[in-house]
Length: 97
Image 1: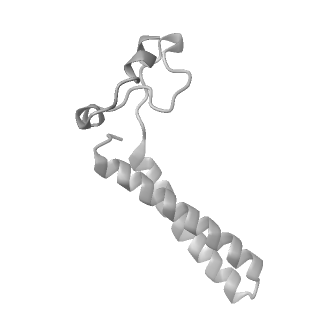
Image 2: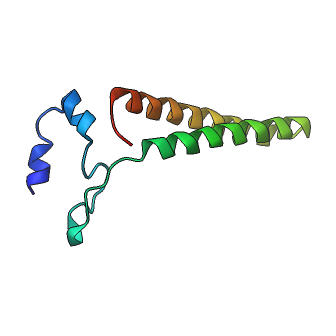
Image 3: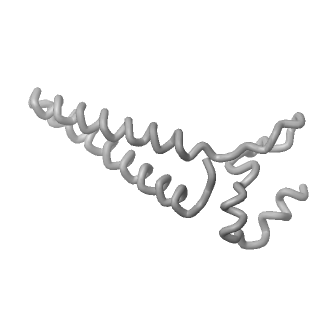
């Protein structure tokens, strides 16, 4: 329960530079597991891949005159681009990963 009390104060830039243990891990501390750190670099790679593939698929659907596929994959590309921008923002802010 000490870890939860630690989150009550605002985090400083130094906290982000050191890393945030147990970040997004609801089972943190059970079974003697080591603290988890965010994998931001992996998320950047996966979001970039999703944007590229979704745009490519949307272009193929547009070429085949399937407007529903173009719209669907266009929305996926926009959502992935927003996720990519947010993860890059977090990485620039100083979070490790």
